[in-house]
Amino acid sequence: MAYKFIDNYRERGARKKLVEHLKGRGIEDQKVLEAIAKVPRHFFFDETFWNQAYRDIAFPIGDGQTISQPYTVAYQSELLHVKRGDKVLEIGTGSGYQTCILLELGAEVYTIERQENLYQRTTQVLPYMGYKANFFLGDGSKGIAEHAPYDKIIVTAGAPFVPEIMLKQLKVGGIFVIPVGDEKSQKMVTIIRVGENDFDRIELDTFRFVPLVGDQAW
Ligand code: SAH
Image (cartoon, rainbow, N blue to C red; front, side):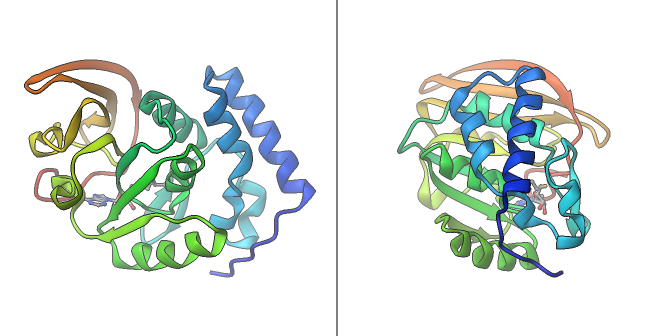
């Protein structure tokens, strides 16, 4: 792929329009909207497809994987209520776009991807863009116990069930956002750890993610 890192008025304008569109779809969190307005999503696309970068659609990024739809990224980010300095675990780095949004929100990000080529790409592209995250290669369906506990955990692939092991890696008061369902559709599930052994669970809208594949997954 031919990547180019130039952010022109055309792309900045397209981002503003995307933000307006997301507001229209119900995204209200000002910080999330500001992050979307800032991150150059077209940097994750081959230049040939720059005209697709600010449409509200998921898009193939190679290796059979996709960059999540902007609405989905905004939706999950809003649910996480990221505060500056929050330690956030992201499962499914993929393109790294969601990672950049979390970083713009002031999070300290731990992100894991199971596909080596995607891992290689993000470990190069994100620092080049000025984004510093802690990258890991491997099966994230078990979380990352070594760096636990986390303030927030976000899973960006569709899971068949909530991996218990990840709940243990959440701080009390922490928020866990994960799409759960079958291969065709998943409900966005938010879990708040209200006490050591006490979890509140809310089911929200339906989405379609690529599958979470691993030990505690498909
Ligand atoms: N957050 C990404 C979305 C990528 S799609 C973005 O903004 O673009 C989901 C990603 O999850 C894919 O790259 C897939 O390879 C990865 N994935 C699936 N199962 C995984 C697992 N068990 N551990 C880590 N990554 C996983």
